Length: 497
Image 1 (spheres, rainbow, N blue to C red):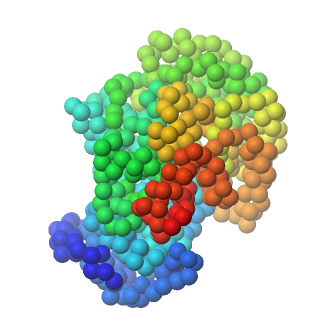
Image 2 (image 1 turned 135 degrees about the vertical axis):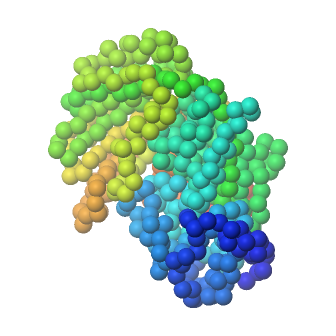
Image 3 (image 1 turned 120 degrees about the vertical axis):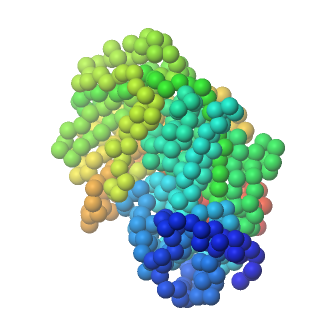
């Protein structure tokens, strides 16, 4: 083992000794012995006891093996369907911890995963049999109102970013579920209720710090490591383990006109057709999404989900004709606090449920597509099914597709189609097959994919087509920073060297 993997051992051990008993206490760790690591080529390699002991001593964080107390909790991710068991989980607490973990992973050519918030639907935060670098304990977020910037460590959840910025009436566009990890969302592009007005989360990043696969700690901005800064804004975890994000914030206030208009499921054709017709004329300040939920009891509903980023009075005028569409069951459009609005949908997608979904970007909703969607709403299933259209466009589409790695600058919405169920079941494969069959009829209408919502099946070709003219440039970056493809559990850009 190369000694440089542990250059900060003494310092890290001293920091660890000074920490109070808590998240990163070493008590409860398993007795160390040789372990087998899954390698990048699908084989295995012995990680020796002596190296493990040295790694453990170097950490301000915590080393977990399958026999360690807390191992099973640490390997849990948002999607309860995922049951991956890493050989080693390194719960990092500092940049040097991340460097040490990356160096071990590289030197042993170990299958490697990165966990921030653990919200990736495909469960790529945890690998099977390799090394998982768990950043969830690095979860501090702060805001400087004078410079209108927010900073976030790699384990921060979106709710923490909002809680740091909203006391000053500031916000950066980020997500629609508060328990999503900020790191994964940002690196994949990221869009939320403010994105039509201010752009993607990635468009509002001022700087990203990361540990690249060679173990170096780098900073990427418009003036430092510009090539990395370009690739990190939209291509995910392909080039390193993020350690810090700096976001541009906007003066938005704290109160917004927002909410749902709910319709009976039987009005699916009317509402979906109306939504398709509304899209071209919607102003940038309004984000209008459309959702259909089909429940186990055969019942269901559709909603228009609205958020207006401008003044309340303007929003009332803009939403008036939309609120007059059809015969709603309930009109829940009202003025609310941004913090509350940002967490409203949390309860609809709780941690630990079983999720399977497919997703794609759209420029329009055609009449034929409406026919297919209506057919889905009229045919029940033994699990809860959801059709979600999230509107994007606006300022997002005003940015050149080559300005960042994120390529989908002409999309007007994202379609997510999927199902969820509470517990594991022996019928799960049948459920997944049913979702895939329905998706096959919808896929031809999509153009590109939001990589944060990919399940992983058939990913390689789709990743290449998705990044389109940006793909070759991303391959050059991968060749430069990760030629061994250590960081491959993502929407992977394969190196060619």
